[in-house]
Amino acid sequence: MNKAIALVASSFLILLLASPTVFATDYTVGDASGWTLEVDYTKWVAGKDFKVGDTLTFKYSPSFHQLDEVSESDFNGCNPSKPIRNHRDGNTKITLSKAGRFFFFCPIGNHCSRSMKLAVTVRA
Image (cartoon, rainbow, N blue to C red; front, side):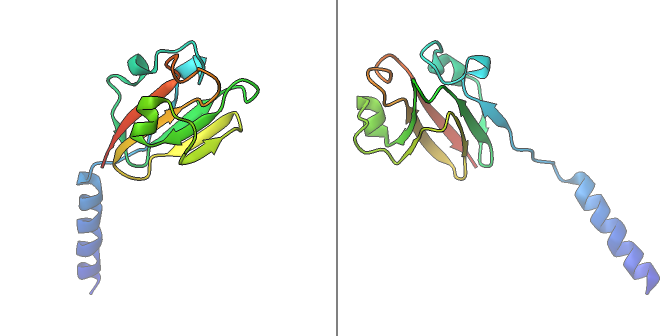
């Protein structure tokens, strides 16, 4: 019986060692600049590989900015009237919980039309 348990345990250990380890990444949107008018978010997102489980952290001054998650059509038209979610805390963490496209912008004044907007594609 002890040989069977040892065989099962060693087989399980080999399986764990052979499996790839998956780590979620926490992206600070805009890096050190944060969520502001000073960043080109199209360039910031280029080359990044967002996966389910990753997080986006938006750091901003709630006196000047907010964060809306919106539909693609509202994103394209900078329409703040129907946000999926609105955040105003200045340190918003969004967990990317499923694959697909996600859209964010600042709904204050003309900030969205001045390119304070971010679209990300998340893969499984």
